[in-house]
Length: 229
Ligand SMILES: Nc1nc2c(ncn2[C@@H]2O[C@H](COP(=O)(O)OP(=O)(O)O)[C@@H](O)[C@H]2O)c(=O)[nH]1
Ligand SMILES: [Mg+2]
Image (cartoon, rainbow, N blue to C red; front, side):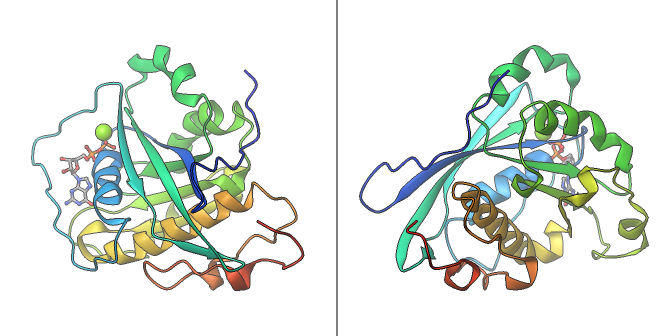
């Protein structure tokens, strides 16, 4: 299957572009909860979050689409917003007949695992299907290690989670929605910047140390100034 290179899609004069991002990974990793969180909170500067955790697991049937608009990014003085279409994909492979349609026109992938329940190898099939086969750059991939429960991020479980190459070159961050939703917003903003940078290969990719402040992804300093965006 051939996939066209991501392109700017300007829908109006305010530089609004659309990006299709898949959320994939094994079942019960927290994909649906994370997608709901992003849909609810990425478009504003909320720092207080209300999350509904379910005691009984409700498996996603096939795929669920969550849409949100990013906050404005400033790129070389131009304001732009990203209309994100987040495809929350079931971790059940019985829906694999739907995968070709799901993969079509994808611009980025968020891979989610629960480091208490999964291992790096559990991401391999999802990497091959949704990243390798679609020829996506690893700059358009974010691996989220979603810790559930009372633990904070960055504990031993995270450091023991071994991701196989070449996926281990992608940005990998730990998150714990219960305590650190704001960190997730910052990381996803950075991920969105990385995806829009793919549209222009002359631009330098922002590094994680250049993360925008929460909810304000100012990327002017992250790019060369020899090109119009
Ligand atoms: N306590 C807690 N529960 C979570 C978290 N993320 C997901 N869950 C719960 O774990 C179960 C599976 O989450 P879900 O998002 O449906 O996983 P999916 O199969 O990857 O889409 C659900 O009952 C969620 O409410 C989390 O960060 N903390
Ligand atoms: Mg789900």
